[in-house]
Image (tube, rainbow, N blue to C red; front, side, top):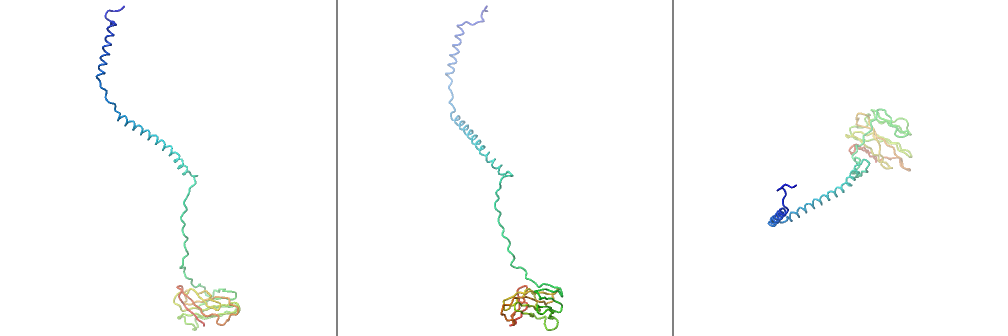
Length: 242
């Protein structure tokens, strides 16, 4: 059952719809669309592409850094082989060319030195004592009998010459410096002897040496010169026999 006035007539509804459509069409016709923002769209597209490219590049760098990190970690492993550059060589120090000069050997009074078989030497406060193979009885050369002037530099010589060997010794005295070496010029060449002194720097001492004698050598004047030098290489005392 229909109530009067509550249901529109079919013809009226269709008429209203048609008028609404016409009104909307007229309104749409009067609207002018704004131009599209093409430049802004292009700029935004470029920014998006750059961001994507940067992201891809960063991802690629990350992939590249991973093996490098692995290599670094491997190099710091305790078991990794380390290559150490060779250390610079340090030249060995050269021996000093200024070695101290030798000095006389200090002996006690009466201390016997066995220079060679049968050849012994010792000092006392009075002078030099010695034996030789052919003279086993002690011989003596005094420093206090007045035959030597200890204030003047000098050298004495006592010798025994055999067919094959020379036994040489003597006194030195009077020098103002420290004696160091002795050189004995012989028919067989230059021999180098040794010096001995008593304690307390008595101002004199004894020298000795042994040398081989050349076959056929003349025992007379076998020694031609004796030179005692000091620690500076200067002549302390000298004796020339011929």
